[in-house]
Length: 357
Ligand SMILES: [Fe+2]
Image (cartoon, rainbow, N blue to C red; front, side):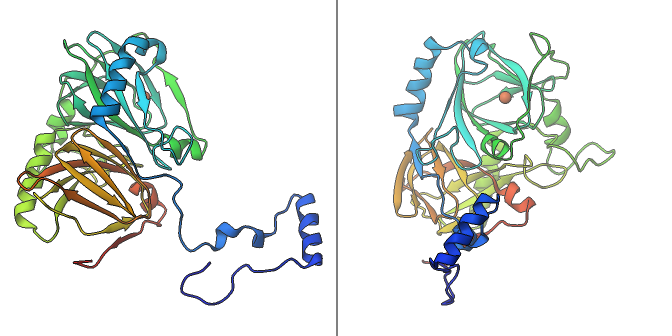
C-alpha cells in the first residue's frame, strides 16, 4: 500500500510466464525486486510492543530472588533483561536492551569491555561504584553513569546495602550489524588509576571547562550526571515554558553538545501536576523509567499505568502521550532512545500533534 497515491505499486500478478521467470531467478541466486514487498510499504511497522515492567511487582522481587541463585562473578553480571514480548530475543526495543542489575555488599561484577555502549541509571541503594577506565564513578540515587563503547568497566559494591540500577545498552543494534566484540579485563581487578569524581570536576561545571585543547571526537568525557542538576534544570524550565503538560531536557556531551553516546540519547522529563503532554511520534524507540511519581503513558491505543521505579518499552513510529495522575506533585521520567543512530544516517523523523489534538 502506498498512502497518498492511487497508483498501484508492485502489483505484477501471477502470469505463468512471470512465475516461471521468478522460479528461474531464484534458482540462479536472484530475487526479483518486485517480490520484496517491504520496499513499497509506506511506514515502518514496529515489531516491539508497548510494555510495562512493574518495579514493585516484577523487577525488584525478581532481582531479590536472583541474589540467592546467581553469583555475578560466575555469571559475569546478575542482570535481568526486559525481553519485549514482540521481539522474542534479548531485546527491549529493536535497537536497545534494558535490564536491571543488582550487586550485593562486597561483590564486584568483573571488569570487561565491549563494542556495545551502555549507561546505568540508579534505582535503589547508593554509594556503589562503576569503575570506568580506572575512574570510580559513585552511583547516587537517580544518577546517570556512562560506560561508553570499548571502555573497561566493573561494578563494585563496597557499601553495606544491595544496589539495583537500570542498564540500557545498544546490544540489539550492535548484534544486528554483527559487530559484537567483547574482552575480559586481563587481571582479576581493574586498578583504580584515576581519582574519584575527576570527570565531573573537569567537565561537569556546565558553563566553563579547563582551558586547553578542545576535544570533539570520541565518547563524552563526562561520565557521571547527577540527578539533582537535571531536576533543578527541569524545575526552572517548567516555570519558563508552560506550553505543554511537561518539559524535557537532554543529557549532553559537554564538548559537543550532542548525545551522551554515539548510539543512545538520554532525556529527563518533568510532568506538571495533572499534566498531559501533546501527542508525539518519532521513528526512534525508547526505554522509559519512572524516577518519581504515578501516571500513565498512552502509546497508540494502549494505556500503560505506571508508578515510581517502573520501566516501559516505547515502540518506534507510534503516537505517545504522558499523563501525570497526581494533581499536586510533579512526576519525573528518564528516557533513553536510539535517536543518534537515526540522525547519523539522516533518517530521523518526528511529528507533534497540533495543540489540543
Ligand atoms: Fe558490560
